[in-house]
Length: 377
Ligand code: 0WD
Ligand code: CA
Image (cartoon, rainbow, N blue to C red; front, side, top):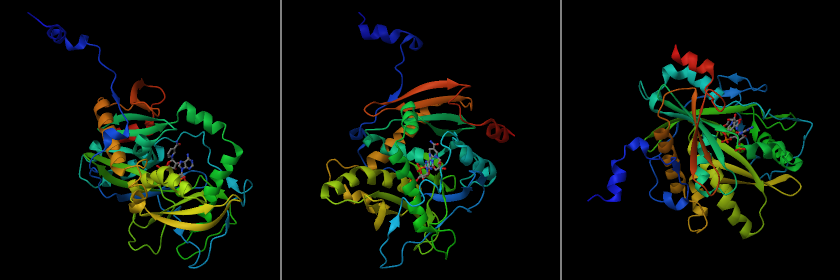
């Protein structure tokens, strides 16, 4: 006599409804030991100029120059707003284009041996940051488009409808706050190694210096690029990325509760971003309600976790990295076909799992024809 289970098992596999694959994101599922993460090494760099044109060199790299020892900062972050502000065009969808240009020009000389790129994941550092913080994120979802081409898995963010709506209706105060972050960089950086900061010029957010790095998370070889604020000419180890410094601004804090919240939320994002690229420290400028930075504090990346280690509502670096590794495995197993015109779109909203949809020959296809054709030669 047959049981019901055996009847079902006897059905041809193709007739069984296949559950849509998805990936859960709850932090509790990703506890455990810290996974392997290869010390990121810099493969190269590029710059974007004042017109947002690609330049295959370090011309946009700036030099860390904080106020002389004992001098308190007194930076007016609102100075020059809006008349000396040239904001980047946020409607321009650049995708991975600048990174792909660098890769095209350097693919012949990549370390790791022949075939290394074919097994790698190529993306922006900022996309990996979003993956790292996903188990703790309660506000903003994300969408990542994925295509496999010549073995390599490419990941490129797609702006969610909610993020687009928010950007288009960004309140004036938030626009000014964004400017203030860039203005802080101008007070803290010089254009030349021995030079002094010049806050009289304009703030042009088209300009960027990007480092291109190689790493590996678990079994996933990574090639990614991230924007770097500056290099410290006096860094104990002069080789990149150990010489890089990340600059941030944050509200001045006055109570233990404000510090606790800062450690739980902001420090997580700072840690994820700088840890991925191997930036050893983040220098924060704390702004008062008038928009002046009167105090600075250096947060070593490797010590950030200490602020939440004993906090039940804190974050855990292992959870972040384990989730990221799980997502990369999920993506590698989902995107099977090698086809630059095929996109698997991974979507996530807080409280839910990562889900997948498939798209062909239309947006969100993101690998440009010039890249695909040049790589096919
Ligand atoms: O168009 C997009 N949705 C994205 C563009 C998403 C992610 C990155 N990018 C571009 C950026 O414009 C930049 O050229 O990629 C490059 C940098 O990538 P990343 O380093 O992977 O990005 P992330 O780590 O998120 O940001 C690093 C810095 C930011 O510093 P802060 O301290 O704010 O985290 O890159 C800058 C910003 O200074 N940046 C941007 N600048 C202008 N417009 C943007 C943006 N959309 N995103 C990051
Ligand atoms: Ca910054």
